[in-house]
Image: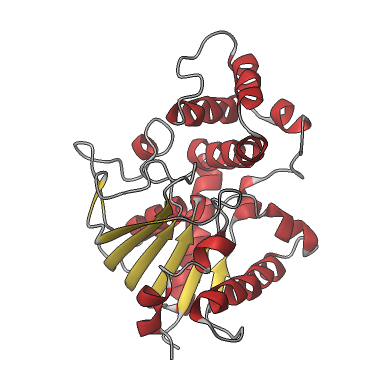
Length: 272
């Protein structure tokens, strides 16, 4: 096998907790699942296809995350701001009025249950990554180290992981890969992610990292994290964007993305 490295998205801190605080244990648990998910798309029995999943979620959390109604109260100001800006992309509460925390709470009441649950994971982790320089650098270094160690031909980056991977590849131009496959990526999300990227976009455009030979982006047309779903208008060097229809409930999970029919044509050339 030529080698594939995965980079996870939001909501994966539970793997670290379940592994008793072991990064290695969390990464291996995720790798086994990703192999199984990809096996569905390839129509074969589960077997090793991912060399490793780069695990960085522990860098974004200082404590066990709150769930349910307590999640909003636990959000800090940067997370509230991300929540409000993200909801604006959906056309919910486009104008910020009143106290930010109060407005963020009102927004959650306007969302359906699946979107609200997603938001309480998305906003704190995106805010932690984009606003805390230490957490950001540690996350990027973790991803870069896994790519450097495994020297994969392919990197599959899901959700927030696509943002970390993008920045890690730009910060480490010695890293060379044949294919960057981004799934459900928020890289192009205006007012939330895009303008805050490092390096900053120039004249409204980001660009493919120099060490990436080919970049393919796959997004569910209704994925509320992948806004806009097509990255070609925001980044030069995106070779292809494929819009897919995954599941109205599981619109953003890596399980649905890896198992979708759009994946095999891009990965088969790199599998033994």
